[in-house]
Length: 230
Image 1 (tube, rainbow, N blue to C red):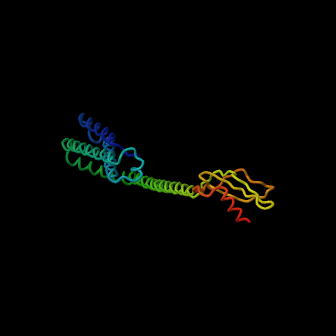
Image 2: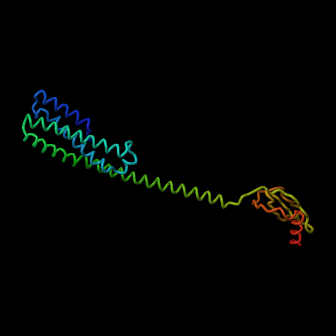
Image 3: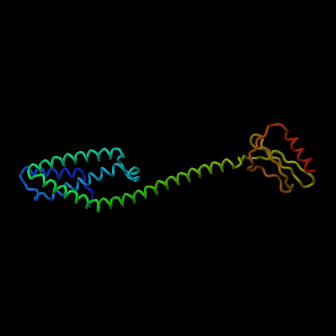
């Protein structure tokens, strides 16, 4: 049993009006009356739900909450106008008691739909709301994890030493079999290490970028290294 719309109510209402205009009795229009009452019950229920929409509707519904509330209110006003017009017809042609009997029948229809259709829809809406909350929390957690990962990656990159190419500038023999290999890189980066004569000095390699002010000459630097080794 699916919810009916205001359009369904209007179709049934027009059929009732036509029936009254040609003198049909109310019993012969029981099907149209039932359809009209069921549709009005659904319209009123939709208006109640529009006042307090579930989260999943706010997140995934194409219509805005305000637009849906306005439409529900307009439908309720239209339904009330139909009810007033039908009441006038019935009380004028059949009598007030007939209208009271119809009101009781309408209450029975509304109760039946409340116990079946509306409760089932409420369960579906609660289930969808749980899914919506889960998706929202999951998306938030994923976004937070992504942000933390980016920040950590940036921090790790910032912590990594900047490298440059150090090229052999000078090599000088120390003692009988030793060599001092002196390298320079960008912005006066300087590195040195010792090697054996038979191995020689590596021509270039990646070294830590360590810019230094240009002060001590290459000759003085080599001399201080040699003095430290002797």
